[in-house]
Figure 1 (cartoon, each protein chain N blue to C red):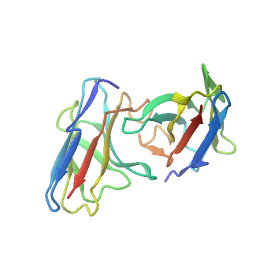
Figure 2 (cartoon, each protein chain N blue to C red):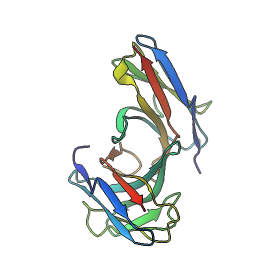
Figure 3 (cartoon, one colour):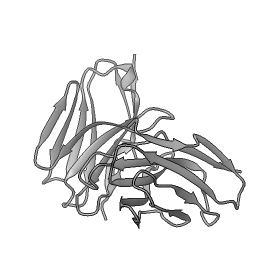
Figure 4 (cartoon, chains in turn yellow, purple):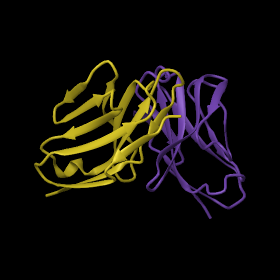
Length: 112
Length: 113
């Protein structure tokens, strides 16, 4: 089955700096890659996703890049703010079986 | 994701008791999912259902059971066979199974005493 790994497990940045979170996946059949943000005690919220037919997608301060050959995708957050502090999960899925496989999450801390 | 509700928010049960967690959605989504979240473990899939009256085991189905009698409802029963049931349980739904975004409910925190 699919295996998704996130690196690093924790990340601390200064407010205003950029943050990059990387994920790798194992199943070349995966074609959908969402990113979720989860604040303490809350539900995961989708922040951006990318499908395998594109290499990059942007939404204001957030962008995701996908390298299908290397089987990795990354979340980029620019001009970080304290409210960006949360746990971020990446996931991978395919249309074949409807499952999403999640990484273990990374805790991002933005220092004021 | 406001169209997915879970109840109760907190649940306490004695060891050896079965307990059922509710998940309802009014988004007319075809697929529904149950995940378990433990600290440092991410989200692990318990069961999922693509259509009414059909469901499949996820990665950690042992000790759990589900039903999908209605499109909008996907209850999860945590049985006494689940060895470590204390966790945060999240329900999700998607419009077209496997090809669309999964939206999560607010979760139920189960504590077994």
